Length: 559
Ligand SMILES: Cc1cc2nc3c(=O)[nH]c(=O)nc-3n(C[C@H](O)[C@H](O)[C@H](O)COP(=O)(O)OP(=O)(O)OC[C@H]3O[C@@H](n4cnc5c(N)ncnc54)[C@H](O)[C@@H]3O)c2cc1C
Image (cartoon, rainbow, N blue to C red; front, side, top):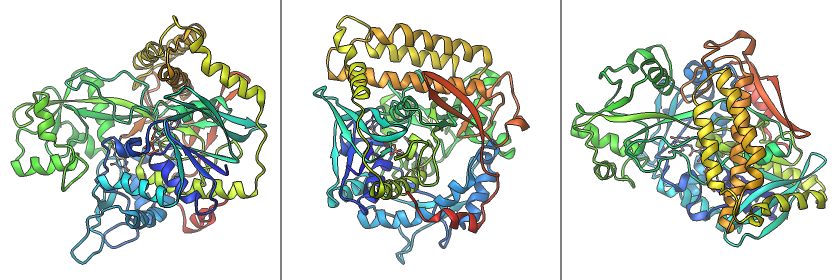
């Protein structure tokens, strides 16, 4: 293969589609099935697409980045503002392509985009168009089909094949047959999404809740780390909040503390993000928070339900019915809203073309940057082009038979131990460690203890893992990744001796409660070297709106 894409979600599909413009040797491996894989297919119907910049009703690229940096997002001090500028410049063209492929967008009566623009909503600037979210995944699948791009389903990538820090392919496990296959490729694009299975699911009225799709066990992050790829921003935790049995976003109504006080008014005035404010409130009072919609008019409630369903005009998920099933009546009761960790912002350190520190290896989407659909699409398109151009000029690397054998032995070891420990039990344990010792509020003592426990689980339990069938084998592969991600997160969080306040992702050290000038523009870089985790700092770019010239210098996508 010229280009091997891992994961067929938003990023993987877009990367493969773009790569196919340069080569017909593109293959996608997907752990689940194309029809129902990734965030887009599991209920995130994304009723809107943003940012829609440089068009009537929307901001310019400069205004968009300015809005981003001046909201709570800009507080982190470790952003790379040119990433946002690139998104602002390139996303609207992608939306037009998606429309050509079948995406349904709500328009003005004259056929123009009905663009909206809200300058400040706490965490970032919003500007975009409303879509029929259900048509998003379908249009990507249709385009993959039109281009004859092959997707190998039910195949989970296990580990990267490498030769002298150059990628040579990937080993994949068929999750139904348990068969292991080596996929030889000139370039690989890692698009395995977020690391959503890292914390214990919060208790509450819902039976089972994870914000992101459950197949995402941080596999790409684990594979990259083990292969020695430089990882960054792993200390930044991403949270969201859950209301009743639906994902957060309480638009309409108020967020109140247990005494019924609308605390967000004050924090919004200070330009803190909604989630950071909720997090601080929970800490301060050690008490539940609630969504209070008791005073909402019927009309507003209808609008809110449609909005939160991500399908503004025709909700696929009928919220009132789902509330009813859980015995909730938001018109009568205040409904608990739980801020919960959902994953991490960071992953492989990436260039403006999606390249990583390993030659031939690219990454895109939530894999590197748990941020947005626009970020996933824009950088996946760049990675697809760069990887295909790279493959055109690169030699295919030899497969190292010793490496292949080690991967095979590690993958199948649990099936040789029928009476050992189930991978599911180990996963529960690791998620328990992270929930207690590496949760949103951190300290040196907790992190050091958590890291000791992870080491102990690695040394004692991994050799005892047991798999009775291919599904268990897959879970054993996943649990190793969950463990690597947990360790990276806690180690990076221990290394970064400051607090980064931010709405959507942040790093809170109770023993270092303020931002430290010494950490300004410093990212934590992690690298796995000779079996050891190495941590260092790297300075990121200036925290200001980039110039047009700076964008033009990276506009052309190079291998
Ligand atoms: C509830 C919700 C609301 C959101 N709201 C917004 C919003 O309002 N605006 C916005 O911009 N963004 C939003 N997002 C984020 C956006 O949906 C994601 O950024 C985007 O879908 C990420 O795409 P991805 O391809 O990187 O990951 P995913 O869509 O998660 O795809 C990853 C794919 O990789 C596969 N995979 C995983 N591991 C392996 C492996 N080892 N081998 C092979 N395949 C593997 C998975 O099965 C999956 O298909 C939201 C997300 C959620 C969940």
